[in-house]
Image 1 (cartoon, rainbow, N blue to C red):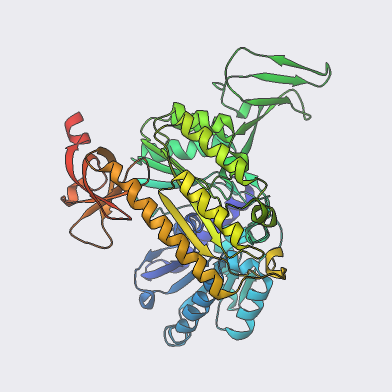
Image 2 (image 1 turned 90 degrees about the vertical axis):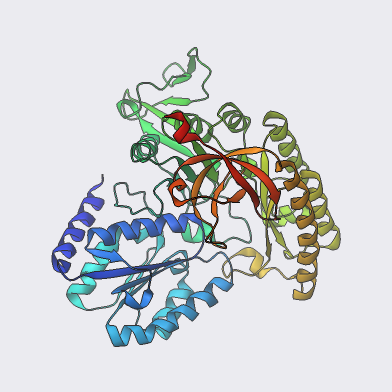
Length: 509
């Protein structure tokens, strides 16, 4: 734990004493990806430590927090619409209103909020989230608005409290930021460059989750398979096998007899070894932790999907057979404009390699329609790739400008009419492909962790199989949190339906 985190824990203790016996409540509105959800869990953990209890009703909250996303344009419209609704609440009840997240790293957004929404109490960014307790304390003591945003890559702070939204599944961030600078994406500008957590901190977090009864984890990163976590000498696990050690004095590599791709180099700071783990190694080590039944990860980049990563998935049944492999476009020309660093052919070759090594793999993807400069021929290439790969899930997006990205300045923007027509054509193809792929599950028995009641049908339970397929079925609430076997009886486009074959936990006792 760093001194900075210790300082924040002291601020949490101070606010806890101020709030003791007041029955205060908080409500967090989270927008965006699972990384944002994890950030909200940390904010919730800090608030709980400061004597705030969660409420699902924003009108009942003493402190209301918006955790923002800036990936798509309508995120701004959504945020400003919700902020406007809080003005009356702020005036009548004195509710503290805070806004944080990626959008706060965009200067034009923070300036607009300060000018148009002066009743907002705290604005903080992705790199100052760890200072939330200090910012709140200063607001409570000085009654002055707080703007705490820094335009740097930020640091990794371990040891902040966290209140998880689930007691069986958990997200574990393994790295922050991104170095890819895709021409349409604002993320590297708001999340900063890549910073990987140390292997020890990640493994310790997963071990603790396993002890607490968590069965499924999702490893998260903006570009998760570019992970490069470092640990120093005696801090590294003594059980880790050494493959090679670079001795600068002898200008030679000294081999060790093992089959691990762990890269080591002699430290410039002394005799301790400085170890760098890649994503494949981390995946293998996480899979060794008892109690964890399923490991998923999001989101990988095709250019970093190495043979070692494919091997790690193939060799470990704990690792989900679902791989989300963002395509974005099937056109090599458009991929170049996007700065994606792979071609159509390279993507298809990677898919073939993955399918050969992992026969039961299920692939999903992201596709952007109507990127600047996309021709009809380019779009046809995208349709061709969709047909060849046979994705079982496709997240489709119509391109929208993001201020501050190179693509927003491109001259050859596609008309809204063409973008929507192409989107409809893609959707028609994807729907047909998904329906066809779903047929193969009928009659099979799938093992799932029961997550809870379906959001669309309160009489049905739901969970996901290793291929990330949503499965709904009839059952009692005592099955929630248990691992069961479900026989698939029918498919319904975006989910499968089945019936309980076996409660694994009950029969294994």
